[in-house]
Image (cartoon, rainbow, N blue to C red):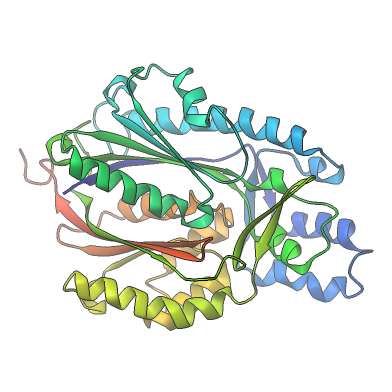
Length: 370
């Protein structure tokens, strides 16, 4: 079955502590909310310590046109995307040998926080020595679900082409979408959660699993996936596209929806895979926020130990939308699960939608002394 051999994460240049962000936002929104002090509690209650941005904190104090924001998105997305790909393919904790760009058969580019045509993957291919015949598969609009969906589509590509090597590149620069003049509470909540992040995963088919000579004793293989769309739920999460740019749609009902809707969805998936909840050792989940993680625990009857890695990623990085689940995957892989360990990879996004993947760690040649 297709396997995930390497994952890289690229940290944007400006790290801002949550208290600093809170002070900036409080000043900006002071006149818009009569109960601003009470509203500010969302910053302290979110279990986020710091977030990383492509712009310094002073950038948020001025208005920026949609055009200016999007130009910045393209420039930084290409720069950070190039770095993430180079890191993913070079020798690391995951690979003993470098994998060349020329060997890559397809790039699945996931992003929802800016616009570019030709897409960011084409611009990246002009910076790195990819074959001109590399398949380009850009996917826009998946939001927080994007990282998991990208890995699912890579799995399907590698099932069709067992010798294939596919990169899943997730780039989200949520900070650039910030709206100073949007006084809805959902914008304030989004401002307390969202951050910038970039991640890249190398997924290969059966006949390419020794690409780069995997260094870990076991690597996650993908045994199956499930995509689910909740009917008539378009107003739960997404963007309103206006003259000033992208305005966040973020329903307060999301934790409740997870509690009610996710469990039967996961149980259907487990039944199809002939699995029980107790067969799952690792929960590779996109941590949308503290309430989302708590909703996962309630819905799936998981202990805090099962959500420890997603929680840690949230604390140190905030919600970076699509790349976040790959940050969690990287941390999980570095814990070196033993061969035979099983996991669920999951993320939720606009639609309202869910993506689930069944992971199983398989021993590599380096664990058997070959």
